[in-house]
Length: 137
Image (cartoon, rainbow, N blue to C red; front, side, top):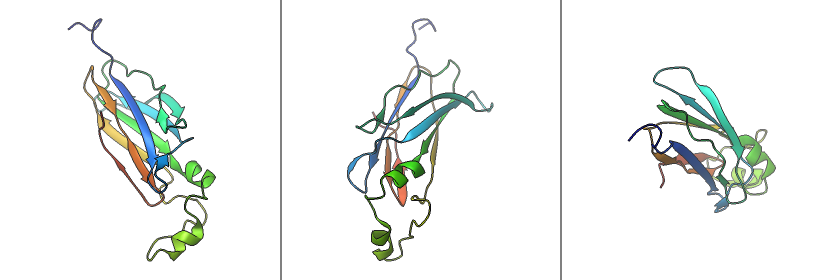
């Protein structure tokens, strides 16, 4: 298949706030790319919608071998503090309180390898004290 007819390499993501069982709306994220062991280059940015999805990430440049998505989770948790209050966190045995920042993980950076012509869906399952990611479909 020639490069003119090859499908573009693309990335999509969505975030579910597992502490409330709902999509995480309003999470800012950035997309960076690199080729081989080269330097990271900013490539796109967006914010999750009401369904927790960021639908407008650009196709990846030819030659991209690695992608990094950085999710700005602190602002999301600060703006949604009613989901898990400080009192609730303090009542949980051994759970750290989120006194100042509103998030134990103020940002989440996910780096993954890509191959030309494939689509990569990378969901983030998020809560105030942890997160999980996987390659979705």
